[in-house]
Length: 139
Image (tube, rainbow, N blue to C red; front, side):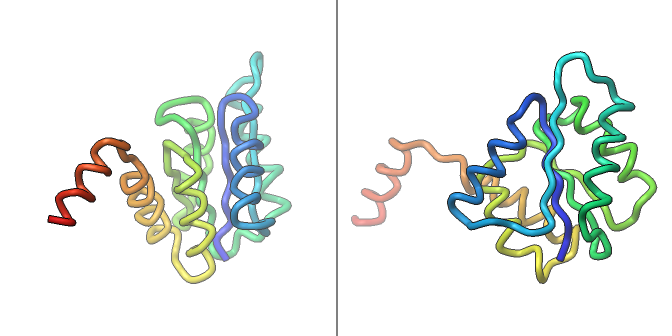
């Protein structure tokens, strides 16, 4: 099973994983990394490294971070750049996490990246547009 590490600014990573487990149940092989005020990139790399020690990374690691180019992304990229079976997805969201949880036991890291990206796209909806689409389907 691919290991998942959620890294974000502040405690968002802890809370989104907690919320995801309310829906999908407690998850194995998932870690979180927080980036707090006053911390630097080297400290984040160390945090990721420590979290990885507690996970089974033999099938690969998917880092799920909040912002492309942000400190959690930059620190994860310093690790992933030299590891073929690791990748990073930005814009972590609850729908992304749930889709990844449901697929990570049988998909590769690269396939999980696509799964996460598609989940994010599919999750963005407008209430009024959805109502209009449903009305058109009924006609």
